[in-house]
Length: 276
Image (cartoon, rainbow, N blue to C red; front, side, top):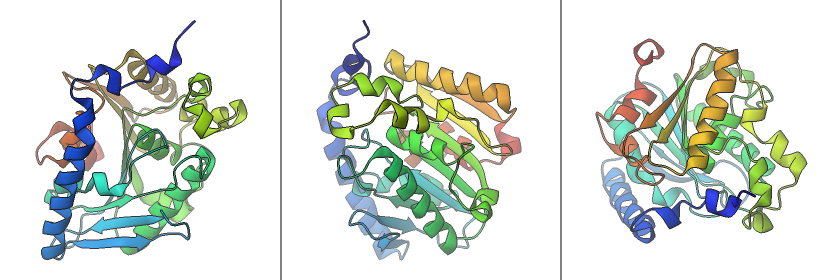
């Protein structure tokens, strides 16, 4: 029998895991303060009517090249936008506006509902920033951005036409194993919902460049999840690829988004031609 709790236990296998959230929170708060002084931040914009339906929008000093939406992880159970503001530094340096939403956490929302909240956040931000849209999410956020480009996407046709790149970082793409974990006591996910909300069990929409990015030093289950969806979607589309970042684990792998010149940032903000 597979121990699915152990398979999805990232913290237990990362040295110093307990310090990451505090460090991220401090770096994010410092970046928000600087961005506010520089006139680059519109904070706590309400994109829908639930208490956590708020996003921060960071704008570069010149007309943006387009919009990046970053969706955070935490197994749909924890964290919010305030931990991740510093990751906007990278896209801003490349002249992209960045929206970072919070969303309702389980058990106050089912994963199906969270998916629809992210749709609403993207639509809201898209109405404020012109140009192409690029989606990036980490862990549970990787799942959520992948859901936006599945064959049952609820994004409006107008917004979908603008989405030209998705990067799912260490995403969970097959939710069925999670029904056998203790976290599902809080998620409350049925087998039916797990199937319907699993990007790996959907077809991908055409004409969107998709990258599945994962740390090469992550738990085997996250490597499997990445291979699973990449292989399936690659059979459907020519514009899908997967990347295994050397020496990166589940927490460190997303930090490169905030670093100008990093490979992850280049993957997100480079043109589709440059990425191939």
